Length: 236
Image 1 (cartoon, rainbow, N blue to C red):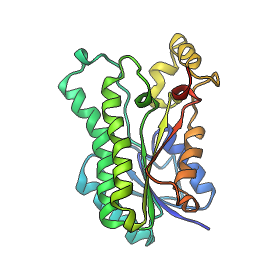
Image 2: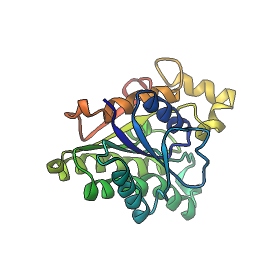
Image 3: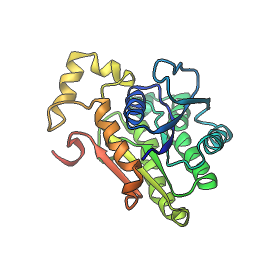
């Protein structure tokens, strides 16, 4: 049975994999885009412009999805960033940019879902770094930890509407966003050693977890952050 999903941030490595996986299952998709070209990602899905950090824009995207499909079974927010610097080197501009693309975009999705959706699921992206103390990660964990807290609160606030809120907390994943690390042999080897399974993640790892959490059959799972990190955050 097909479901209908809205994906914000579909052009990235995880997003493009998720689109391919959901389309292969016959699901209906509305892909929100900013400046990116999505034609190469999908010839089957619907497209609509969205500014992920703008409340009204995200609200309009969800309204369009409801008008297009009727019931929306899931809203997935994938935009994110990587900034690895000690706090004394973080500029105020970098601070606001990181909070906006990670935390504000997630809040915008919760806000839109709470107003417009019911019997549905919202999936947000955290980071494995939230659970452990990694040097130079202060900026990104400040934003991502807020997402995990919002997931817990929203799952209570909107339970009466049968809305579920969950997050994925991946470790380093081989995507264009992480190319500066992945393409550096020394950094890549060090990262691989941090993971008990001996490798970093690939987009399929994250897509599989997202599909599980947004599946309407798994409607007893809410308020959770699922670590998909090769065991990094739970082992020494």
